[in-house]
Structure formats: structure tokens, C-alpha cells
Amino acid sequence: MANSAKGLTFFPDSSRSYLTELLPGFMLCLVVGRAATFVSDHYGGPTILYALLMGMSLNYLSQEGRCVTGIQFSAKAVQRIGIALLGARITFEQLLGLGITPIAIVLAGVPAPILESMTELSRWCLIVAMVGLGMKASFKELSTMGWKPVVLLVSETLFLALLVMIWLFIAR
Image (cartoon, rainbow, N blue to C red; front, side):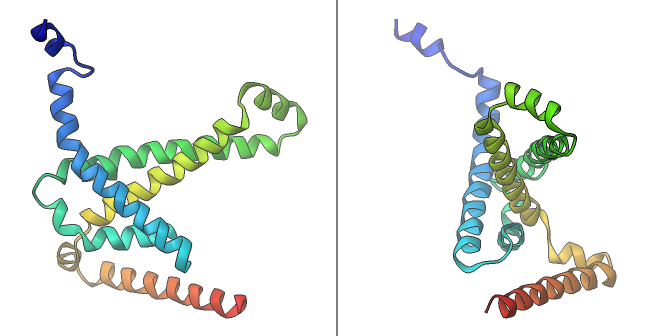
């Protein structure tokens, strides 16, 4: 009886081994994404930027080790899911601009909690993907591409810092 119970699994062995390879890196991206959200909620600023910067600080984890597969999955597959969900939300917002008839059809077919869940899931997928992309980014590799990407990165960072400072000055 123990042997037959042992054979009953939810995932086949190949899927289980893929999940065990995927889980450490994906969970790391999820935790760093949650940390980025916490910092953004408590100190202000864009969550995506915090996720990208925190991910970049953990770049060494994407080079080798147990987290590589999960980080690659987060940077590619999770990003695609997030963008698809974002696209579905934009489509719904475009329906709102068409008038009352399409809105009635959508409201009859898609309840509001599903739409809110799609928005939140899309947000989290994009945050996790940004952490994964940040972990894959390397200043060493960036510097080998020449001076233009470095100047672009520095100028974007300064631009965002300027926007945050202006916002803080206006909000004061």
C-alpha cells in the first residue's frame, strides 16, 4: 500500500524536478519584489525602480547556483504574463470609452473582482519580472558595451531623482 501511495503524485517527476529548480530563484524574486513594494509604500517612489535596483544589487545570484533558473523564468515568462494581463486591462479601459452597450456586456460577463485581481496580478508579475531583469543586469557587462548605455542609465537615474525631488517639493 505504501508503494501505491508513493506513486500518487500531483506532478510527474520531470515537472517536479523543474519546479525544484525554478522555486529558489522565483521565490527570491518574489521576496525582493515584496521588499521593493514595502519600501515604495513607506518611503514613496516608484516600485518598479526599487525592484530593478534591488534586483541589480543581487546580480551575482543570476550568474550561477540554485537561483539561475527561477530568475530567468521571472525575467521572461512572468514578464510576459504581466504584460498580457496589463494588455487585458487596457482593453477593458478602452471599452469604457466606447459607450454604455459594450460596458453592459462586459459587466454581465466579467465581474469586478476578476478585473481587480487581473490588475493586481499584472502589477505583481511586472514587479517580479523587474527584479529578475535587475538580477540579470550587470554593470560589468554594461561597461563593455561602451559609454552610451552607461550615460543612458545615469541620465535616467538623475531624471527620476529630479522628478521625485520636484514631487516632494510640490507636495510639501
